[in-house]
Amino acid sequence: MPIPLLDLKRQYEPIREEVERKLAEVAASQYFILGPEVESFEKEAASWLGVEHAVGVASGTDALLVALMALDIGPGDEVVLPTFTFFATAGVVARLGATPVFVDIEPADFNIDPSVIADRLTDRTKAVIPVHLFGQSADVAAILEAAGEVPVIEDCAQSWGSDFAGRYTGGHGVMGAFSFFPSKNLGGFGDGGLVTTRDAELAATLKQLRVHGQSGAYLHPRVGGNFRLDALQAAVLRVKLPHVQRWIQGRRANAMRYVDRFTQAGLDKVLGLPAALPGRGHTFNQLVIRAPRRDELRQHLVERGIGCAVYYPLPLHLQPCFAALGHREGDFPVAEAASREVIALPVFPELTEDEIGQVVGAIAEFYGR
Ligand SMILES: *Cc1c(COP(=O)(O)O)cnc(C)c1O
Image 1 (tube, helix red, strand yellow):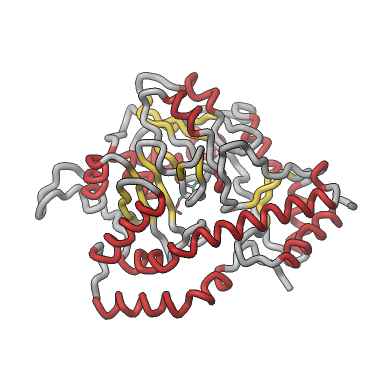
Image 2 (cartoon, rainbow, N blue to C red):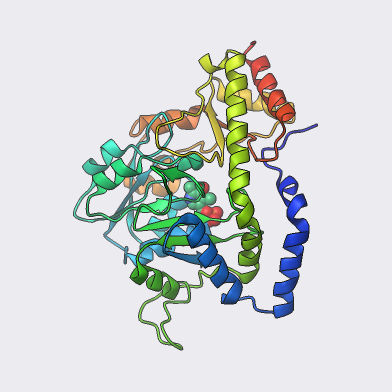
């Protein structure tokens, strides 16, 4: 039997009735834009995450975009972010006419290297965006210290439920941006996102920005856009929210099973396994290992019906659309090495022990163990 990288049907089956009932309720109400489902979800999400305010938006990308817009970031401004992340983290900066200022990552956890942030700050730096990549919290304390007065916006797209020093990601910086893309820890039935903040004024600005910057009826103090979270998505997310802690525990248990089995097979000496760093919670939105001869291993797994993926094969400083920034290969060697070595394996909560055994077996076979 093939083993998919992600099988959302297994998550859906046990909650199907609950979700369908909820969707039918929304359909009966014909209330689709903002309204009670979105407001309830925002309250429940804020309470779950331990933040004062949560503002539902149309995607994780829009969450990052409105967060930058709320800080009035635009042409001439600079935003510091890691080069090893999903495209959106930098794309939103460029879309506003600001300049993404890339920095390298730490080899142990693939997250932004706090020790190089200070060097990249100028009087034009308007934000720092750390990404809690693959679900592992970045070193928030060191990042906040390095950023100083510069606002930190956390990219929490992959880190719903990950904590740093006892507080969830999204509650450390001035804002946190979450995604409900179906593959994330908490996934909707399509696109969705959320911005968290402890600042009431920022929350009001975010709510204004998501409805074209409108304050009253057809009065626009600022230019926003249509960045709203759908009521149907909010309804699905409300049903899923009480289950997400259990799903995260499932991901963690699976990650530990991989580490145990890799170690038993002696593969801990061949592969780079996820590092358990003190205080840095990991929810394993992705289980990413470093593998020698990565592309051949990937082919080997694909031939055996085992789902896997490379996040991310090209760091952002080398993307053609950012060529004008003048970066070249060798500028960020840690990120470039990661791009050559990483591979993500199935780790979704419903994955069975037997399936994990098969994945590890196939990898052991490839390395002749
Ligand atoms: C998924 C993701 C996003 C974007 O979220 P969408 O909901 O797909 O727009 C942003 N940053 C990171 C790190 C992501 O993984």
